Image (cartoon, rainbow, N blue to C red):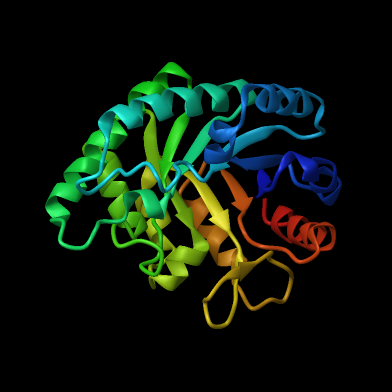
Length: 258
């Protein structure tokens, strides 16, 4: 198990010095880059002190997965470009949250939306296999998305898709917001491939970097992960007013559990 952080390449040196073992990029940002810009990024990644192992921000909101605007041809074009670039950067796990892309439009049957999501993940699995990238479905709180809100639901979807390249992510912020017990991570079994961790604000409006004494029981999270025999990594996904200072505190705290 490694501890990483969601951050751009400009923060690689700071993240490494803080004690993080890897970076997590935005996949949609990688896909949106011009060729020259992406080539320059790849060169920076090659000389960075820590690798880029994961990515979040899977799909831009303009490409719909559910509803009447879902475009299968657009899925194929995007997945080819995005996952080929992910592989070129060295990414092993791609997190599918993408609430704006997958949210079910008003009036659209949820049964059809579930079928569309399953079809999308089956399609994505083919590209994931081609480029040796694993896709982890991220449950999002209801304030951000109206479907796939629980780790248990993501686990069911992964089972339905039945691919070696589609699994599950657990995000502690979304789990807390949805009142889902940590044990859902253990019940996901060997389909739990990635974890996001953060310190929620008291009103649950957002999240910040973890730090010792912030009121969150991180020990309980890691206890469940170890009980589950978890083999994946844990990324801090949160905002930071002072990245260097907050990264150092977060890395020190989280590394103490592994």
